[in-house]
Image 1: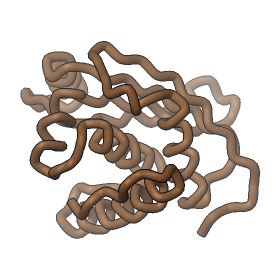
Image 2: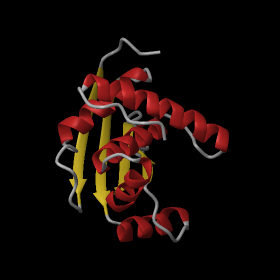
Image 3: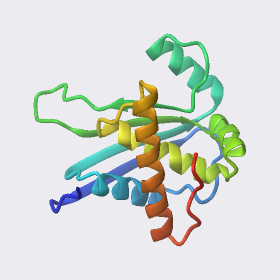
Image 4: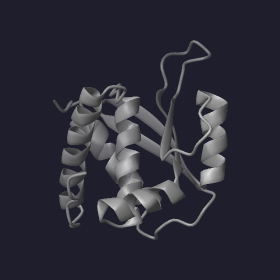
Length: 162
């Protein structure tokens, strides 16, 4: 249920690789704000979004999870390390190469896949989990619904089911 409390979203965007021209800071802020608002979030949110290649993603996957293969997204929630209250948000590390491959399999453009992955990462920051098949199905269903709403609000074609 959406919250009526104020919501602020600050995004820091970094790209080590080329990205589609549609994937702008403004578009990502709009998407993140939509997801957070629809999920009832409030307060100030800070998101760091970094697009990388498979080699960088593979190394991060090894360093943080002990898995020696690339993945499409890793989410790192912020923690309150100084005791001044919880900082809401986190960093999203996204492989643009995995996104291109995923997009080809899903039948849509790389920009749609990158938006889809950002939506996925924001849901993780909000506490959604996809560790089991049931959790993954529920998360993907919510993610798809949110993406359709956002795409429609932007005058874009709604993504197909995944």
